[in-house]
Length: 116
Image (cartoon, rainbow, N blue to C red; front, side, top):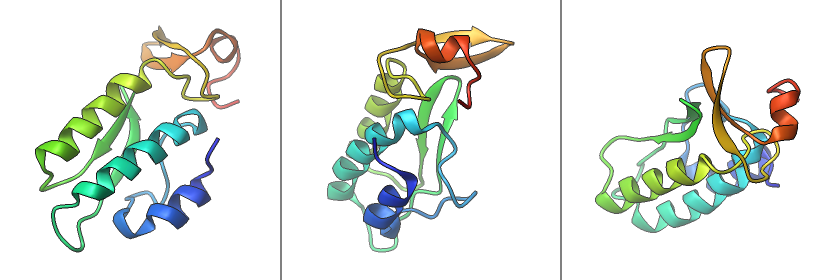
């Protein structure tokens, strides 16, 4: 599983994260890596940045401005795929409601704390 540091080292030139970090669990880091690899081939202009990568409604949300259709398609594909990957540990999972919130978790992580 990729670390935040590895993602920042490899793709930092296209990230300007508002919180200075990814706002999601480590289980999605490999998906983020793969998505950023695809996205870097379609950067519309020098200085283009991604300000937000976070969990939203149990799915990965990659936000940006002035994106091309290719970038939007990659972001949407990542969002859909994330709903099948545990946000905590990266194994196959499903999106569930817990305490009024949506999470995508495997059975093991669902039984424990979301931040384990």
